[in-house]
Image 1: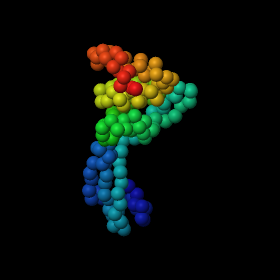
Image 2: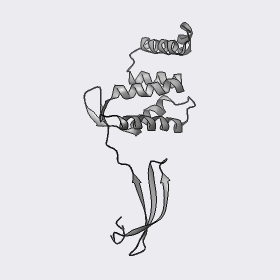
Image 3: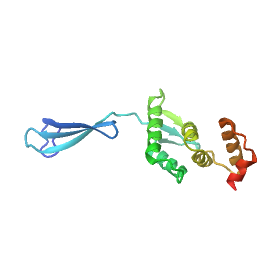
Image 4: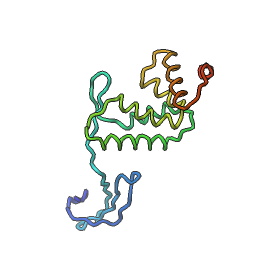
Length: 164
């Protein structure tokens, strides 16, 4: 490791510890030539995942963008931001482990909806309304009916009363 002060290439490690929830290692080093102390971070290099958008464009997967969408969908639902970060971490890991490096935004949306369904029905409907581009009340009703069928409930019109 090259010293940032004198550019000497020999240093010794004074301390190592896990950082960034175990995804990287933080090392305190000391230059063997000038005794300057500095910190380095080591992390596994990942190949970027490309997202194929609905309009046909491609962009690099952006975890911050996904987390922002989740935070917006989960506002005032009582879900902890740390829990949402772990959902994004898990999703990012799933994408990294795939054989291909390209994924559609539709696939990502469905993976997120699977997680939200178990965590919060309100967050699920909010996220689905943006992700699936709801055009009117009928889209909300169809989604609520789908949630009711999956959970074994049959509230019928009671679900609509909750919207109004």
